[in-house]
Image 1 (tube, one colour):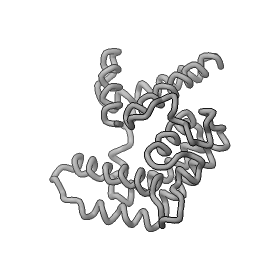
Image 2: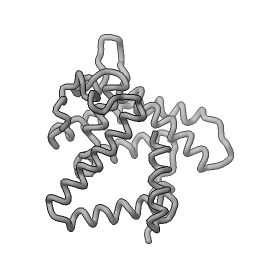
Image 3: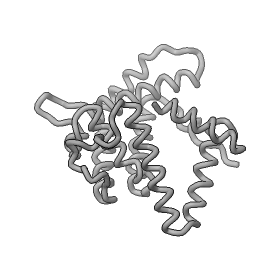
Image 4: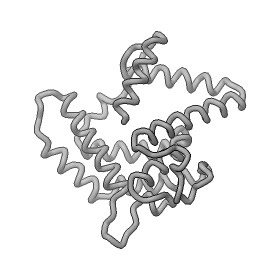
Length: 206
């Protein structure tokens, strides 16, 4: 899903004069953020709603869910999360991501991956390991049959539906400083455990 989403972004942005690369997406997002900061509250809210609705549609299409019924059996049936709720949820996610057992699992899987002879290809494979563990162990995993998954603990549905519900509602709070801090700190830990060179992931200064 993310690969298709990013490819479409690159394609659209290249027609607007941006580099057809990850750097083009970064520049666009940076300029969009600057524009939003200078805009009136009404424009800011309109852009926020458009971004939220687009992300929800992409998620539901990817997982084969009907957008109108995506929040059925969710504690957040109103389709909104307060910033306090979003921060509490992301704190729980970040704590789960940094559990020693999970970081050890990431490290073992990454270490056992066959080398392709290309650092970029190896990092891509390690990223797929991280993404798989994030979805199946962090969000949907259960330590035993009597436990609830993290998405269920946070008041969402079970399985893929619960995961999509959670991502749909959390998407509009990703730029909140505290939410970003929780996720950023946890992602650094899990990427380091996978042996991914973080220096190569940082955008080059202009």
